[in-house]
Length: 635
Image (tube, rainbow, N blue to C red; front, side):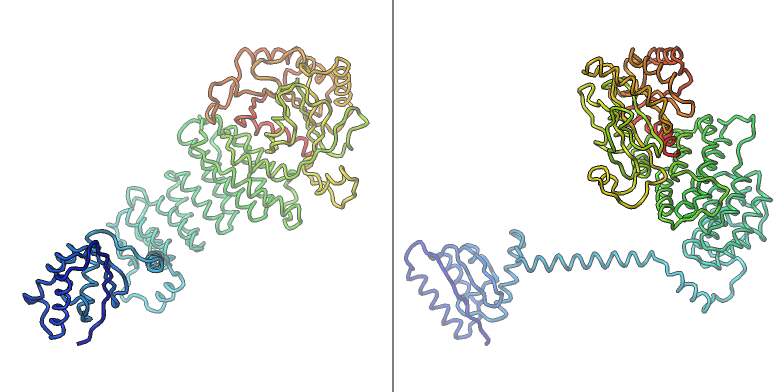
């Protein structure tokens, strides 16, 4: 009999008794003589051992390879432990090990070693990855393999309208519109050329315009979209022509917009524009724009034009993209009059701006060359998008205007602070001037529109700006080294470069009256003689309206500003007029303040100037400010 030795290590609380010693000797001889450990004599051993002086006992099992702890009572009650303590057979050892696991599972969790835990985790991860890959492979379609199998092993006995689908195996005159739609979707998802041709033959040859209660036109539009997705232009053209001839009265703007996007996907811009002008034409003059039909047509015309602009910007064709933006600018006032909301439109302005930014970058590097000389492009393609945006209802989206500011303001550098005409920089670009009384928020507004935190220094102390500060926007790289160290660097400024001029504040500035007078004289001379000034922003506090200093500025601007320059009144801190300003309630101005402002402007000769409501906290009005800033960039 093959045996293994087992060592008993004990801790005794009193001397080893003669009863225990006798039990051990008896057990040894019984095991040596081959007696079965289930007989009566052997059954008395655990009881004898339990009555002895043994306390918690630690048994080391060579086969199991681990320790376990048992007290005397557990030892006596365990039926899996034999009376042969000193000598155990291999089978007894395995039985003991399995009994130990069952006891541990009953009393608590078995604590695994670190290597066992890591192995278990690796196995679980591998199993999860395998199941995930199996799920992915089930959903993935191998179009090339499927097409080759269909060509080699066609199904025998296929009729003209039999399909490969198990769900809709055949199209008949009794088929519903839902059956046809399911067949089209499946053919598109699996790129099943046979099924898409079968659906085409069924819709064009088997049924007429009364099929599915006149729903055939919508099915043809869905068929055209699927065919364009599969690059089957001939089939798509047939479906579009039949839909236009036989179902013009029931054509929906949403379906026309989907076909236009499909045509753009395959690069067929000519047919896309033809479809746009035919099926999504502008409402007839005199018809109410707020009707459901006209609102749907305007909405999907705008979204289709946005798709055309976005795709051409990303494909490096700026002329068609700018032309589409001009068409968006033309329908913007109609969109506002129709009452369409921002949520209903869901215009993808951010995507269009990103496309224009990418195209403009290629244009500056020379990799993008305009292909239509008759189309006049702006100095920065993003300005074409901005022009269209300002005609639509504004959502003042932070993500959109962050992309806009980063595209229009790529580099900023402080050029100089002038206190006289002799200190002005060279007049080689347009200039946008910000003027207003002290502590009205000029520096905060400049930082907001340029998406910078500290371009212009902000302070709660009135009169901190005490010179004409010139900030160069989009100057040549390294211009600050030329200004600071006198280095001469190669390169030229960008075509959309301009100056932002921050003039000192009047009114509450703690400076002598002589200095204020010098500021006033300098400002008058600067506005009259500086030929590159394109726009003057006069900042007025929206809480209080114009004060005496504002009236003086209006009077001097009305007298000295050339007609080619624009004058804009900007009401700042509009968020202070509302309690708990938020994205839905960004700011307002009181009616009496607005009436007082208009009256003051009229009295000082600037009554026709536009008024913009802004807030540097809620970012209100930044789109309108940028619309006039573009005048300086496009000089």
